[in-house]
Length: 459
Image 1 (cartoon, rainbow, N blue to C red):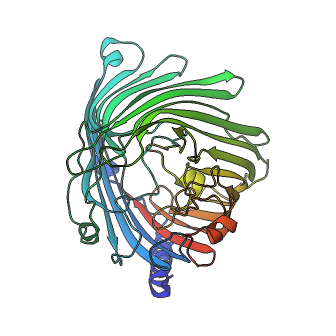
Image 2: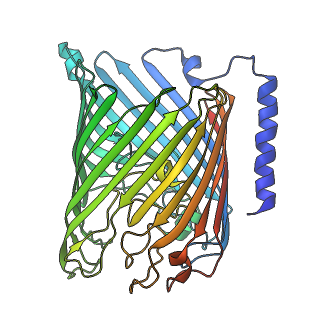
């Protein structure tokens, strides 16, 4: 961690916080309030982030690195009757980086229109239940967001160009159907990303994402249900060799929401099948896919003033097994990782592939302005011969065991000005187990340590 950069960021947070507290009784400025329109909605945000890690877990790259990022967003939507038109311009840039810093296209996406759409509420136009058709580029957030969502923690968005239908019934049951071309982010070269070069993202028929999602509240007491089916079809293009993934992913989720003095729980299970090329080579053989994942948790919220909640967690995602006739590594499609697996950015060792985990989480809400949590996860590999999660550490012989170690993480968020200014600070420690120290390409470093500090403005 660069102490100078960290201290500067911390000083900025404290200075702005002190100023904001002094002015806390003054009405806050928002674009929406200044417009004063019920038909036109305008929202903007700016996030400043400093993050750093030491003792790299990857086989390559620097032992330590830090990064400063700025993400700016402006959302506009106009509604009149059953018609809507809207869009979002998002600008994600990096600073204080060099070619060895482990950033990627998820960190850099300057001046990108992540949304530009038109929509019509057919049911509203005809009278009846909501049935909205949307066409253009838009964001998709469904269910637990484990398989498709716009990441809140990551700087760049997950956008899709196509058509979608959203239907809501009288019993609050909801159905979403979509057929899209996922946004393929630019720039994608290291130098262009270092230069924050403005290159608009592309989408085409070489990558197609489609599916359906149905939710039904309170199917039994407080238990809510979701079922879904997603399809991904990927093919080479002249300038990009791929593994030609053709994946079908059905799944379901049962959950109850946390409430004081009550137990809550969640179970999500997904299976993946289809076919994939053994490599990106054009003549590589095709293999069938058979992969699974599940997430389970059981929580209890105590009736105390700070709403303390204790949660037991379990996750499983298959890895590719040597000698198997099929490909077994689960693909998490367009699912963000932050909620389940900790900070990403230049860190992010964990993902929903070749990962087995149990753990516990303790959450607190001391006030309407503040929330915090601490979490512990024990980590193993499903397949001893596949690379562990997102670390790229692998033992093809399977001689380094399956215990990867454990991860501890914590976060605290505080609204300096409710709805307008928030400080978010957190970090994680990956305490390496036998596999992450003994595998042939494991780096000779100690436990990986990461920290970040965010300053968020909403206007």
